[in-house]
Amino acid sequence: AQSVTQLGSHVSVSEGALVLLRCNYSSSVPPYLFWYVQYPNQGLQLLLKYTTGATLVKGINGFEAEFKKSETSFHLTKPSAHMSDAAEYFCAVRDRTGANSKLTFGKGITLSVRP
Amino acid sequence: GAGVSQSPSNKVTEKGKDVELRCDPISGHTALYWYRQSLGQGLEFLIYFQGNSAPDKSGLPSDRFSAERTGGSVSTLTIQRTQQEDSAVYLCASSLMGTGTDTQYFGPGTRLTVL
Image (cartoon, rainbow over all chains, first blue to last red):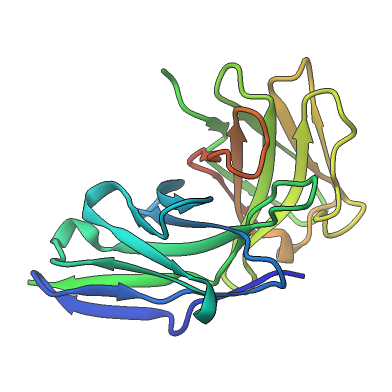
């Protein structure tokens, strides 16, 4: 069974600082990889996804993530944090081989941005 | 166009009562998913509908939970004899084809509170 690990539950950065949110997956075959963001009292919004091809993926709002097969990782980064980035971030995976395209989510990380 | 909509946005019920939660997917999307988001368990898959195929019910936590999708569009998640541990946010998502690379678009969720 697939699993997703997001270390820590809360990250706090200063406005303008680098954002780094970590995600590691566990599966024998590299899955499809996703990052979603959830703002308070809203549903999840896709930031970016990796399916195939270039391993550095650019998403919305200046975020990007790099798939590293050797490290089984898909960390999310943004060079300069904005106050509006404060939200909860979820890493998710989907099996490449199964018929059910359900998402398996990590526990999520809450990002706070200090002025 | 319109996104995924869910109703009600909030539902408070008494232990032992039945509840119905509704999801309207994006028009033309053939795949529909239900997930549950709770403090203790994070985001969990519940059930998946794809076209006219039999639904994948592998994530339903007990036989008190059921779901149907009428006419390949609107879906209803029913919880019978609600328990306090059913309190959570129930999220619905839809995708165009239900393939592994498809993006799942999420609704705002229904917050269920069981007293």
